[in-house]
Amino acid sequence: MLVAAAVCPAPPLLVPEVAAGAAAELGDARTACSDALAVLAASRPDLLVVVGAAAEGGAYDQGTPGGFAGFGVDLTVTLGPDLGEPPSGHATGTTLPASLPASLAVAGWLLGQARWAAAPVAGVAVAADLAPSGCGLLGADLGGSAERVAMLVLGDGSACRTLKAPGYLDERAAAFDAEAARALGAADVAALAGLDAALAAELQAAGRAPWQVLAGAAEGAELAGRLLYEDAPYGVGYFVAAWS
Image (tube, rainbow, N blue to C red; front, top):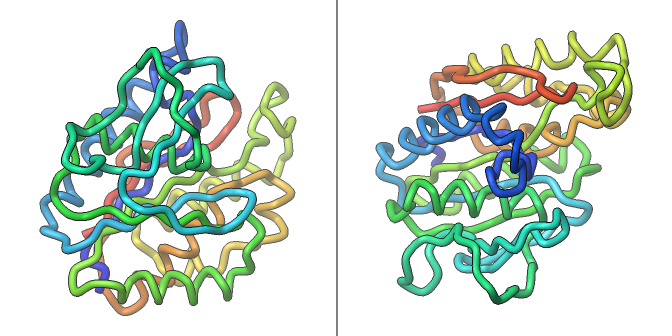
């Protein structure tokens, strides 16, 4: 049963080494992510399930490596602690095979910063185009995968908030993000499940599928939510929320 969830944005720019000179711009978002992860640890979970969007769905074991070489940074991470070694999130001179999709690599970095050791970790990449019904079924399955499940969900809102945004300006983006932020902050399962997949795709909102997986996992759990961060730097909607 789902006992807690943290929702965080998924951009590699969240990692200071990737953001470089712009690292300070997402400082508040990192702090909020840290606070949300603390809620997960306090829930005493038996299992932490990490969910992020990717081109294709797949499962990833604890300790799976990933990295940010595609963003010009020699930084490797693992999905949770690797075989009892200290939590990762460190630069090295050796490049490991990067098998985690970008969203789960960001999750690996966040877990490393938090020195996560509260529960075993399992990673799930959800296909960005998975239908809402499929997301709900996947979430229900994940929510029942242990007696006490915590979930870390990585996903962004629209990428169309400004003229310089990755998806250019779309006048529908602000309203979409406002409803997503409200639903995430209120732990409104029905509203998340009801997000329009076609509109989300047009607005390049990569968080739609992971959020709907969360909605499926949280059905009947009656969790309360708090919105810890909301902003649209670079024209992309970023949200941090904690459910418990």
